[in-house]
Image 1 (cartoon, rainbow, N blue to C red):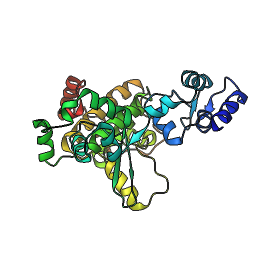
Image 2 (cartoon, helix red, strand yellow):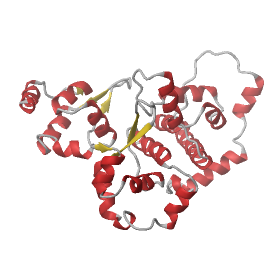
Image 3 (cartoon, one colour):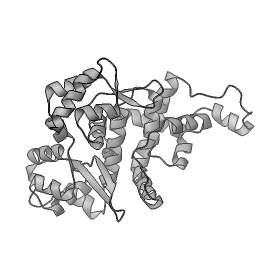
Image 4 (tube, rainbow, N blue to C red):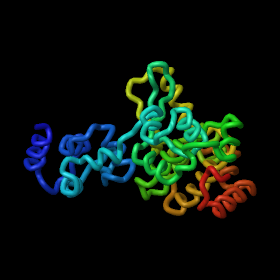
Length: 303
């Protein structure tokens, strides 16, 4: 009955006019979380208002999705997420083995939430776990390979780092604007790191204005927000280095595209700041950017 009601709504809706996200969710019969993840993964194509405030879905996109899969069962399966217990059952392994694979970075979470004890609960795409089990049966049983043991023996946990890397990649794919891409990259650096890479205050202000939230915050307690903030920021020195040089390279491209907006009338900057802004890039910065260009095709985990 619910599906039939959705179909009637779709027929009655006007054609040709982009739909607000809430209307598209209603017509597709999806949960908000399913819709958001489908958009992030590129399964649903959206557009952004001219002011960048809201995402909309073209009528043709809704029709395409319904024509390909009237009940949207395939789409729902592609965005279905599972935790450790269900994920280990899906892969036919113990939760302990699943945890080792996740901490060592062999499987990457797509999202997380905080439980009532403010502990992080990582969620994985069920589709990806099934594919991993099919491709790598040797990793599911027996003695762990040396590479995995080395990571685990060192006490590393790559889940948060891999989630950040994945989140940045998915968000970056949603825009072609170089400044927005730079802002996305900057979102995992703390204010001190950001100021060291972006010494121009107007550029920093512009990046902060464009910066998206890596996680949704809806009425969380201060303690929960603090826990989320820790997960968002890069932690390991090599990860911080990778994101710093990535941001420097993004800034080079953004500056070539257009300058960051500046007020037409502004107070005179101190002489030291003016001299610093006009000085050539330090040799270390140029070296980092050259290094990144040489390794731009490599994964962060290979650093």
